[in-house]
Image (cartoon, rainbow, N blue to C red; front, side, top):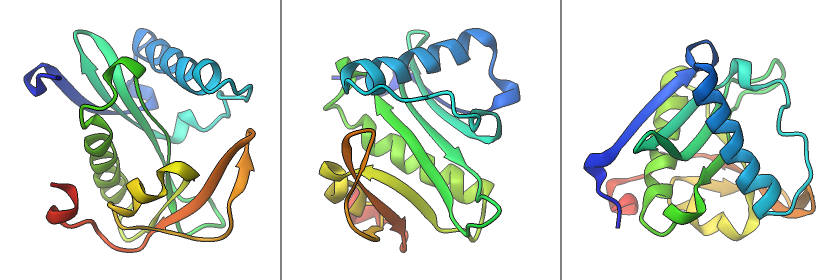
Length: 161
C-alpha cells in the first residue's frame, strides 16, 4: 500500500534536473530496462536533453518515471517512453497515475499532437484504457515483443477509475 500523501509528482526539463536527480533517473532505468529485463541496449540515446521527465518521488527516492519527447522533424506524434515503476512499488496503481500524468504533460507541451508509444506487447490492454490503439504488427525491440500504439482518443474518467 502506498500513502499518496507521501508522493511528490514533478515534471522536469533536462536543464532543470540536478546531477543527483538525473543519476537517480538513470539508475532506475538501468535497474528496470537493463538488469531486470536482461536487455543490453543504449539507454543514453541523446534524447534526454529534449525530453520532459515525469517523476514520482517517495522519501527522496524516484519510484516511477516516464519520458515525453517532442515530435521529430518528420513526425506528427509526440512520444512517451521509458515508462517504469520501481519493482518494489508495482501493483499499487502507480502505473495508471504515471501514464495519465505523462499524457497530460505531452498534451500540454505539444498540443494538438497525438501521442505514440512503443508498448511492450503484454501491456496493450493497459494502454487501450488511455485511448491508445494498435498500429502495425508486433516487432522485436531489444529482443522484447513491442507494438506501436497511437493515442487516438482521450481517456474517460470511467476508464481510469
